[in-house]
Image (spheres, rainbow, N blue to C red):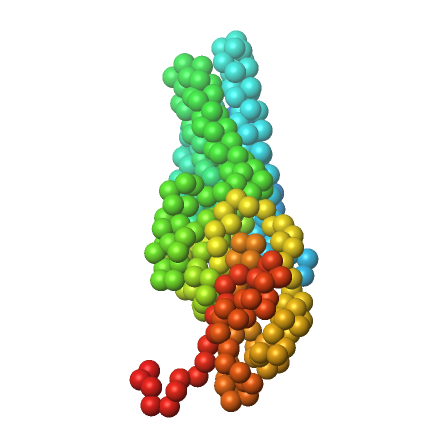
Length: 387
């Protein structure tokens, strides 16, 4: 993700959070004042809840500033996990809030009817305005969060909606108290608390799954596998692994290609696979591909015991010193397949050879090298030969 896009997303998140914070301050002050003057303890508590939204908005502003920073040496994959941490904190707060509301509502339901203070009609107006305002900021904030793929902003949107839920409780409670059925608001409050707790649990659990590197769902994994498998040059795909980093997805996969192609062609195939996957899934920000010349699915990297290029050249120079020029041996193409090394020899100037070279002669001369696989010899075409 480019620095410009990160800055734009941070600005969008800051703007919507500041708007929500200003609304929370206005509603908090208004509900507390009206609740005190018109005898509604529930509205006062709802106003305090609005002030708690201000605290969460400040948390979001701080975390978003960190989460949208570009990768650095300490965080080479980016800082999106700070956003995940913030989402988990907000989700946990919602769970605690749900428990507190449910307990308070249960106490109110079990209390004596005479203990309920009858509120005045302005309480209904204040609760209604709070519901409308918080529902509007919820929809606005969630739209921005989905646009910039920020779980933290979406979580804050749901936090705003819990304030609307609590205002519904106040509205129902005030109306119920005015009609003499005071216990209805307590029952409704318990039901809304369950909804708030469910939202908090969903946000917290999704954050926990991300923090423990849970893979994306099976359907998307199969779709990505099929996209990679259908790319020209790819024979098979295996060890496809994924994890989330905030709103982004990181992907690792192994691509099986022909063992005789060049390193650059294998890399180009991987680049094509990466581009096709990103075109289909824009939230995949990073793809690490491993090019395999043979299927090593499920196999752990181990010491093969096969010689290195310099060791191979030294061994073949000793075996073929009277048959090939050193230049031909130093430009070998090697293929490590299984427990053998196949060799391709390029003879660019046949006139330098003291005698004709045959593959059987080369194999006989190197029969003591148990790691040697197939041998191929490439010579320039004779003049006048059709290509």
